[in-house]
Amino acid sequence: MAIELYDTTLRDGTQGEHINLSVQDKLLITEKLDEFGMDFIEGGWPSSNPKDEEFFLKARKLTLDRSKLCSFGSTARLLQNIENDPNLQGLLHSETPVITIFGKTWIAHTSKGLGISEEENAELIYRSVSFLNSHGREVFFDAEHFFDGFKDNPLFALRMLKAAAEGGASRLVLCDTNGGSLPHEIDAIVRRVLAETGIPVGIHSHNDGDLAVANSLAAVIAGATHIHGTINGIGERCGNANLISIIANIMLKMDRNFTFVEHLSQLTSLSKFVYEILNMPPDGKAPFVGRSAFAHKGGIHVSAVMKDSSLYEHIDPKLVGNRQRVLVSELAGQSNIRYKAQELGIELPEKGELLKNLVNHIKELEHKGYQFDGAEASFELILHRELGNFNPYFEVRESKVTIESRKGSKNVDQAVLKVAVGNEIEHIAADGDGPVNALDKALRKALIRFYPQIKTIKLVDYKVRVLEEKRGTSAKVRVLIETGNGRDTWGTVGVSTNIIEASLQALCDSMNYHLFILKASIPSGEELLQD
Image 1: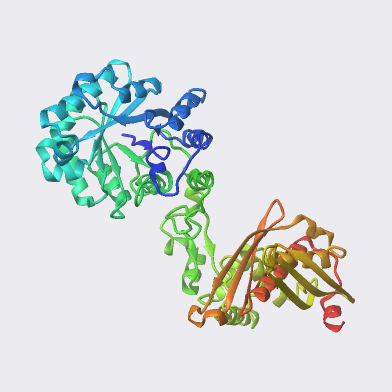
Image 2: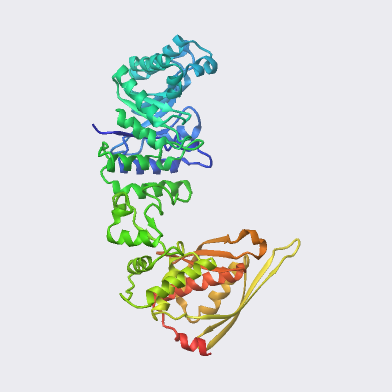
């Protein structure tokens, strides 16, 4: 039997700290989730805020090929006012084919929170579900705090589920709302519920114990066929169950299928898409889809991976749309260097001292503070320099940066550079918004006459990391910059006790790399050194 996927990124996911989605954002994600193959997409709580009401209004114009849109809300507040309850009316007005409502299944919440009896709570659940069902809507019942409630009073918790079933609920979704249950508890309780009710059971896990994915898989093993979660695990407190990891594990490790998901290779792009809409950086360490998920740094590991990737990778990264990466660092061996060279299309000699010298050189640079994980362009230039394929296109002979702070007026930052290009010297000054911007402008100004190709590139990102922090202001800094030309981006690195010097190193590498890739016509490196 296929497993159903119920995505609550647009509702439960937005309850996470620093998470905010506009109506247009939610519409874009809805279309992406439908394209991927979600069975159900929970759009929000229409009675709780104007944004969700607007979303459901605009979502009517969407053409969803696979997914059913769901609205979310609670049971009615008062037994004597079921038909006119504003929450239930709002759910009906959302015009979604599926409605998910939650009710109390922990006796402590019923008596202390709602202040009603067991009988009254069961009647609220039954009549709320029945009312929505009578209007032609499929109803899922979210059993709030179910696992905590079951452990406290199993008879009460089960009675509330049965009330929902009698009212016409087609799914009973068991919620680990506080996120504190363990997989073996989930397994045993799901089996008990299935034996008692006979209705399809779902699982809705939170990640407060870092077990939301494990608990969701335990529920499936026990017989659950309906899974709630969010893309990338976003959500309140520590987040929700991460559907990205759940989908990959179920399809690749448990040999189970979903109703519509056909192209698992879209998983990484789906994860990145949602991060992009959220304006958040992707989690590099995320299982399956993270940039580091299949990254190898140790030389022994790389040597083994080059022979058989399964020796250090639990799946083929291509299955989820990711890729294998080999990092170059102080832990690198000859295998790392050879792998990276092959990846970059650079031929290295099979034997000789070159590889050994390269490894030692890289390790020495890393010892000084350089890092090439995010600066592969700098690494590529080192390879080409050692192979005799590259000489710098220019040389910065002198540099000076002045910073003037004036009370009541704008600060003035100026960079003065003396740059050699072949037999010519350019002596250039430029003002900028900060010293690094001034350096960037001055360097471009000095080179533009010789290399008009640099017009197309711009600084995309700039990061500074303080090394040897205990040394305070005398500590080294590592500057990583990312540069782009509208099509590609590349990273370069510089290290110094002087942040300006480190920035200049990274900027020079960035421009040299761009010119080298374009194979610009330049004076030879020998002329630069002899001038």
